[in-house]
Length: 273
Image (cartoon, rainbow, N blue to C red):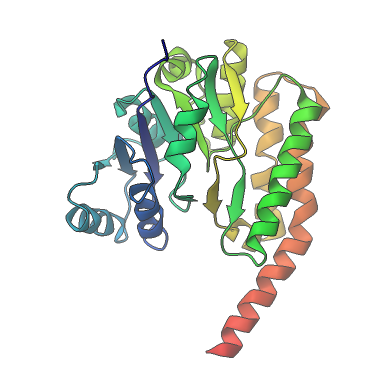
């Protein structure tokens, strides 16, 4: 007897995301297989994030779009936890407010979690605001496969494109780091706790999410601080295997070229106005 098709919730933490939240939520709504819940958790936004989400609820009244405010604490981790705790589906997806998931994302998540041995899953990303996007997707997929071969049994989640069983979340929820000082990669922290509990993370190449490359516009100092979150997260857990730092070095390597491409894009836009 085949197991029942997993239900899927999508949790979207948001803080002042008026520029991206519309596209993010619409992509989550317009799926080939509808999500059972789309949960936006607004963390003290001072812009029009709330108004945009409420307008989308009116525009798509039949969608399972739910809006929450999490005002007790500022930060991604408490906002993420708030949403994950309230999701009721078998599988809980977690994306960023600038993610734009592909139309078959929920369908591919359901296929992946038909394998009951899988506790969590992640997939490649398509940088939608960079040139040669489909080429970039293939490159991203190849890099991730290479890193997985290096790390062998250890697979990391990517916060812009991830999902986990509700049972897996409940198993690790009270173990995850609160990260009050905002120093860690919260998705890597989740990955470490899943691994410590013997819960399998799968890489699913057909589970594709778009994301912005806006991080490449950071100053070298800010970008380095962001990327070294890998190092700080693994150090917090006493994990010294240099292979686990491979994604960090990949991010450092792409920064000069990526920043140059972004600068060229902005100049072209300015000249066309």
